[in-house]
Structure formats: C-alpha cells, structure tokens
Image 1 (cartoon, rainbow, N blue to C red):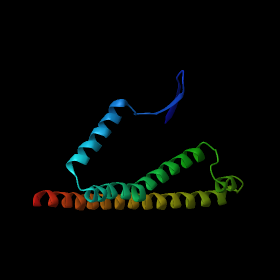
Image 2 (cartoon, one colour; image 1 turned 60 degrees about the vertical axis):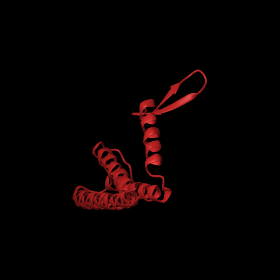
Image 3 (cartoon, rainbow, N blue to C red; image 1 turned 180 degrees about the horizontal axis):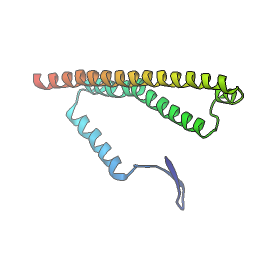
Length: 143
C-alpha cells in the first residue's frame, strides 16, 4: 500500500514499511558488499542468482496467487472480475453447479502449478546463490 502525504512543497509517496533506517541499512549493506567483493563479476553472478530467479519464478506465482484470492473473494461476494463469471450467472442451476465444480478444479490445478513454480524458483535461487557464494569463497581462499 502506498500513502500520499501532503507536504508544503511537494507530494511524497511513502510505501508501508519504508523508513530512513531501512534505506540506510540497505545502503550500508550495499557498501559492505562492494568492499567485501571487489571482483564485480562475482558480485554480478550473485545478484543474478538472487534477482533472476526472484523475477522469473518466485514473484509471478505470488502475484498470480494474490489475483486468484481476490477473484475468489469477489465471486463469493457476487461481484464479477472476469467475463466467465458473468456468463455463469445466466446459466440454470444444474449447469451452474457443473461449471462451478469445473472452475474449482481449474483453480486447484492453477494453485498446484503456482506452488510448483514457486518451489522451483526457490530451489534455483538456493543453488545459484550457493554456486555464486562458492565462487566468491574460492577467490578469497586463493588470495
């Protein structure tokens, strides 16, 4: 969530959980990493292992999961998020119950798919990060 707060000179957008201490800690962490790992290639491989798997395999399933939760909540409240849920409202009871069962099965399959992708993303991130850290330690041990 983002809150807009009015100040005399401008508008500031502050994300929930944002603080000067968090920003300072992230800057200090970046500074310490830059000093600890002078070889940029090793640092890029570590950053790639962390951010690549996060942006490709971890964050998208989390966003899709949140969307499915919102969609189910809206359907339970009788609101419509997609055209298919509007079409379901005009079917008779027998057809609607069959469509509802098919919809629940497809949502369950989608959730299983999201869990598999999320798990795979975490495995790739751990393996990639471990390999990058092993390379960093190997360089330091050879010094």
